[in-house]
Length: 408
Image 1 (cartoon, one colour):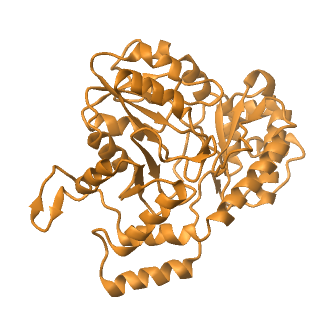
Image 2 (cartoon, one colour):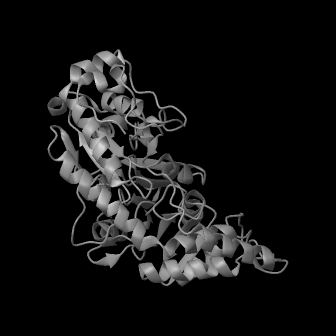
Image 3 (cartoon, one colour):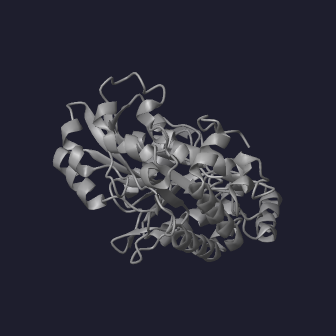
């Protein structure tokens, strides 16, 4: 790690990168590998690799208990979990969803033959704006999929009121919100159901995986059939289903990381507080806070870049950081509504989403997690500060080129 005292030290201006190896927004947590391997050996000894094995059932029970819900139905990944949940809830026709979300949220609907109708977001929380939903409802609308962004839950009560008023199904994409609370209550029990992601980059991963949380036992039973080809019993298929099961090795990873979850969350919180304090001194860089009264996983360090004050636009700063091997990310650029196949479906949608378009051009996520140490955070802050002190040199070094994300 190298300090940036002069503009010539910046990598875009010919200096050496601050980090010899890339640091990431979401490098996977691995936990105690010996305990994980012991579970894997147990799985191999039993030769029960999938099909609702004992580790999957143990993991489901643990996750349900942590979130205070009756049912947790584990799946092969979060996207499949969302697909099965929307189908099990009977969603069809049109479903209202924010554009400011990972593309899988829209794809999960589209794959079910459902048209995603994109709604704008709130300027502060970046969640779907409940006050804008009524005007998007048509005779074909069957549901709402809302998204908990950055581990900060959206206004579930307001959304439940909208859904109830119109007789709509309500599903929450809670991919960011594992072990997060709203109004002192853990997420998981709102709407018809809530979806978790256990992808490798999430605060708790199962290598790859997802789950549906719900208090609706009938809905959970239906989803358990759907994730296993519709089998009710041996050679007894009673429902149209697919293969969405979580395997035993994935569940073993989840159980192993649950044993280290307090240490993971503490590392995340430490990094966030260091970023918050350090970035507060820099012009045009606003770290999005977490509410102290609620439980948060601190998985993401999210900042807004105000070009008028920072002297650099978000993408120029991003390119400068990548040159330093600081692999910051722009989420969820440019918004689902500007991505194919949705780009040409509604010619008027862009004008309906001013907040989404604005936020998508300002958001920057900084590296954190158990692989990022406090001294790494200090270096990232040092680099950002150097870039903002010398915006003209950074722009000259970039040669006016736009940000191009490379595969790493």
